[in-house]
Image (cartoon, rainbow, N blue to C red; front, side, top):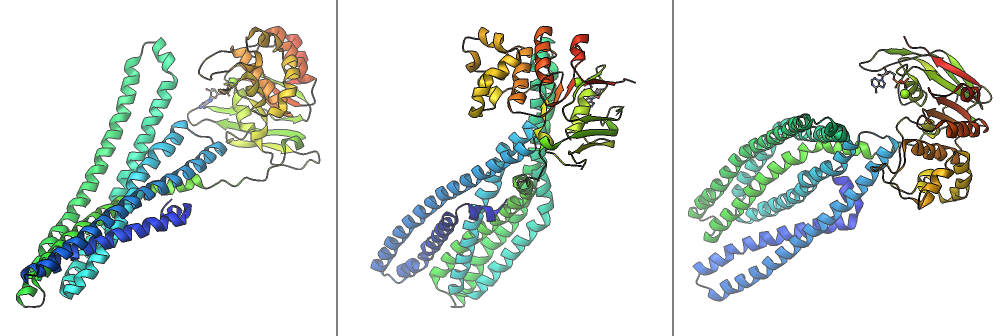
Length: 525
Ligand SMILES: Nc1ncnc2c1ncn2[C@@H]1O[C@H](COP(=O)(O)OP(=O)(O)O)[C@@H](O)[C@H]1O
Ligand SMILES: [Mg+2]
């Protein structure tokens, strides 16, 4: 993310901004320059010329102000336009590769804010200053080349210095961002469990965790400011050398009859302008560079991950689990028996809790990398295929519901499926539940409110998978909260389909177990 993107979002507007900035600085330079003939007019006693000059100065001053204000508004418009675009792409990234919510919030909010204030806004003023310096140096030429040579020398020195300090400022900014991410993360992690903390009355721990993380953030902000201030102090040395040096040189030139009286004062103004601008350019340059890591990271996130060519999950004919074992970073090793599942089979996966049933699903879905062994998907011809594992009808132990109606939660907003809802509702023992609700299937759900019971939610998510014709289903305790009778009905419905079903359950009756083709039992250690 940088200038290129800024230009690309709307080239015409970008050039308008550049043009207006240039106009502003040209008029500022002329405005200041007019002081010289004004003073010469006074020293020559030409009052009319003096007044005329003042009049011209007034008009130029107005043009300068207006063009600057328009430039500034157009610049804001351009950056906001760009950010809107960036946000869309970042959301797209997280859609494809879900990650921590706090991380996404940080990128969409704080990071862009930081880039606005520490990059694009700074660039705007940086450009203003730089153009002003160019104009001013050009004008100084009309007085005497020595003034220009001296100004350039100081300018070069002022530009060289921050390059040496770049490393420190960069690191400091990056630290602020990472501390901020950690802070948001802490909030997210601890607030998820707020209910539970209240239940056990541990406000102290919540306050402590948040305070620690907030303190880290505060420290890193402080360090960043300190680093930037050092850079500013160094830049200020050149500023003073420039401000004092130019009028002194102009004075010497005047006494040698090489410049006019007006030139001494005007050169002094210009010197002030140049060195103020150079000083601020230097500081801004440091600030601009300090956002580089952050900008690169956001640029990474915006790269559309190319949609890979996947085989359809409907092509899966066999699933083979071989020599599979998984190890969590701090946990013990879980080893699985070898097994092969054929299309259409209905398999029950059992084992004591903690034996690794859920982990097996996550590994088969490619969410967890195994430490050894493989999960091989083959087609009818026995060829190894790469299906899009995200398309498998997976019902995790913790279900996902949306702020929408029950109907929409089943159809996932695909209105073409509305006609089929009735039959899935009946097939999955949900009719009685619907009758009990005043608005039936049109009842609006709130994710944060438990309007539906655990069992009802399980039914909704199961119906969601079935209505979308998922031919391969991994069901993790998908009926654990549903009563026995309804479970039997749901299982009958499920085994009556052609789908391949792999279901984890630990509380089924003998009759219910008999509905499956076979059982795979995981042994604990
Ligand atoms: N994200 C995780 N990080 C570390 N250990 C985990 C994680 N998830 C599960 N485990 C551990 O792996 C083992 C198997 O867990 P799991 O697959 O959920 O078992 P099951 O579903 O059979 O009850 C357990 O000992 C559990 O503590
Ligand atoms: Mg489990």
